[in-house]
Structure formats: C-alpha cells, structure tokens
Image (tube, rainbow, N blue to C red; front, side, top):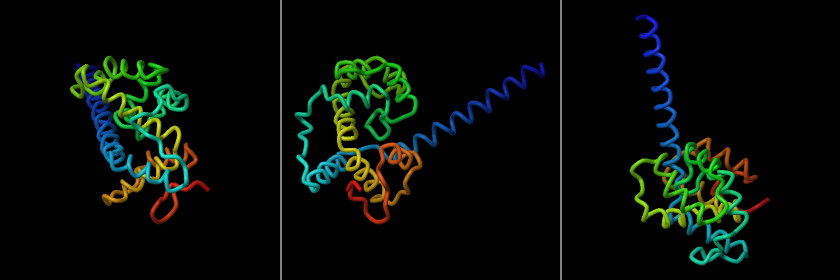
Length: 183
C-alpha cells in the first residue's frame, strides 16, 4: 500500500513538473510567435540593406536551405513549429519537401497540438510555416532582429530561448533597437 502511495506521489510530482515546463514553454513561445507585422518588418530590413526583397507569395517551395532547416527541426520562432514537442516530431519526420510539410500538418501536428487544425487547414498552415522558415533560413539576421524588435515593442523581456537561438544563428544582440545588420 505504501509503495503504491509513493508511486502515485512520484507520478503526481512528475506531472506537476511537466505541466510547469509546458506552461513556461508556452509563455515563452507565445512571446516569440512570428506575426505578419514581424514578417513585414523582416522584409523591410532586407530591403534596407540593399538586398532583393523576396516575394513570399512566390517563394520557391523547394528552397534547399529552408527544407534543410525544416528537416532538422531547427524551427524555434517559426510559426506553428516552435514548440519543443513539435520540433522533435519534425526532426523525426524529416521533412524533405512542401508535400512532406503539408503531410506533417495533416498527420502529426494534431497529435502535438490537439484541436488546432482540421485537414483542410493543413496546406495553409504549412505554407505560413514555410514562409517563416524561408526567411529564417535565408535571412537569419533580419528575421531574428524583427522578432526581437516585436518582443521589445510590447514591453516583454527577451526569452532565453530566443537569445540562445540568436547565438546558434550567429546573430549578435546589441543594445538599442536591433536593425538586423550583419557585423
């Protein structure tokens, strides 16, 4: 009887820790979800550096850098694909094409984010995620700078997850307003 009670206590404590971790991750990720505003700001930054501004409605759906980023689950700050559980599932799924990404949204995504999508939405969500992944893969400094700016603009502090992602991408976070310029 006592063994059963200790087992129940351990499971309860484990659930509490897991629930707390999920809550922390959710709050962190809610802060860094890419919005249309930061997408537009990313494009503005790209143009301000004299680079050609990509047409996201006509972006190549077979871009190697983007598919590599998706296939590796390197999707922190990418719309719909930024939670730890989804990134892990994405790595296991090994997305190699836009068709794979749509399939991921139809089959595996609902398992990790219940109640979020019906099958008809999967293509739209996959395309939105792909656009973010394209910007992150091909214009990481501008993508992250726009994201950092959006976090600061609403008065939030910068989540450690986002700081770590900037470091992974080699994007320096300087004082003042980030402008996405590469050093």
